[in-house]
Amino acid sequence: MATFFISLVFFLCFLLSTYALTSPSDISALKAFKASVKPSSIPTWSCLASWDFAAADPCASPRRTHFTCGLTCSPDSKRVTQITLDPVGYSGTLTPLLSQLTQLATLDLADNYFYGIIPFSISSLVNLQSLTLRSNKFSGSVPSSITKLKLLEALDLSHNSLSGFLPSAMNWMSGLRRLDLSYNQLKGSIPKLPPNLLELALKRNSLSGPLSKSSFDGSTQLEVIELSENSFTGTLQSWFFLLPSIQQVNLANNSLTGVEISSPTAGQSDVVAVDLGFNRIEGYVPVNFAAYPLLSSLTLRYNRLRGKIPLVLAQKKSLKRLFLDGNFLIGQPPASLFGGQAPVSGSLGDNCLWGCPASSQLCLPTQKPSSICKQAYGGKPKS
Image (tube, rainbow, N blue to C red):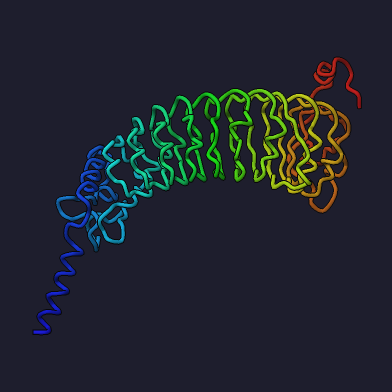
């Protein structure tokens, strides 16, 4: 008799682990999600092909033949907590019924061919912590409702065809740490940023206007700023490099005309890399960059800079890469750039320098013709 009851217990446990456990609303959302994907884009060996609702419950285990990958459930096997699809070329739209997955913490559809708009109802995913729709074909605007996702820590919508303006209430997203909207068609200015943001990437959009201090107010934890290949204009003011946690800045390929650099407060700064190349920056090479103790890479190539290379910058021991090519710099480059046990790499070419050692890679490409240099200085440039 005891053996019978033990066998019965094991049998009941088996039933509980293999039959319907998943919330009906989650099942209907998953069905709608799969139905929105074109069947012809689902390879027979893919995760989504294993989603057979007639054969198994999504959260039941073990998953030997059905629902083998692509989703994760809560410990009690009742709610779906993650959808992470394999990058096999799925093509389809994102169903608004996905909003029924209210315990979803991760949604990752990267590197596929999903298209259409990002549904406004995505704001119902109140437990979402990571949203990755990178490298798809989504279009339309970034839904303003996305700012209601207070627990969201990482948002990656890069490499799509999103357009319009950035949501004005992005600063409401108090949990957001990483934001990547690069390689889209977004326009306008940067709104006030989330207060706990660590990384900001908006590369290759159509954002414009001057960078406003109000956008970065409260950004005390921001470490990485990637804003290259946009249309930002005006002068980059001194407050920018005084952001307390800033480490890496890329503003290359914009239309900036000036840059103001103040020495860091009490000589303390974490800035290690700055790229301001391919702008329209005029004036002299900012000497105060030498006051940033950890600066190892500085790029100011192809601007409209004049005058000499500051000696104090050339003697900076932390500096390992220096790109000043494509300007109108004059004089003889400091010898400290070429000597020492670890000479600086980069380029001083395509300027109006003289005495740049031909044997040094740093002096390539060759300098500008003297006629161009004379024209730039309204006569013969002073050495």
